[in-house]
Figure 1 (cartoon, rainbow, N blue to C red):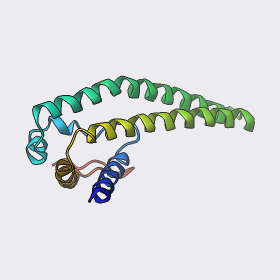
Figure 2 (cartoon, helix red, strand yellow):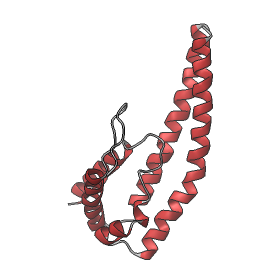
Figure 3 (tube, rainbow, N blue to C red):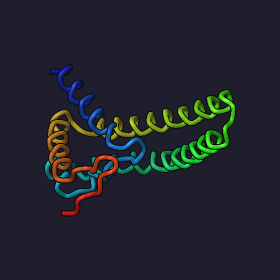
Length: 147
């Protein structure tokens, strides 16, 4: 049973980790009345999850700004025909920031999920799957369809 619950947690993390590399989450699910009802979230759990999110958000935003700046520098180097060594050094900077940002986001998601009981995790997975079905994300290059 314990291994199964751990597997479900990993599946949920993987499901959400692919949502957007940086955009903290698709939406503040713990504030959504339907999610609160479907997952049986308590007021205290919502407050704890929101605290985790609000504490992490400034670091995510700062890292995202740094990532954007470093990616711009990389583009400039490439456009200016910089030598390979300079480009590789900048690529290393960009990827280190990206990795740090994704780690911070994944830890935030983990800490949020740790607030939930095993039963709530199962309910969360079902509720999130339904939300994704109801709110399909456009593929790159596609125009979002408004309902």
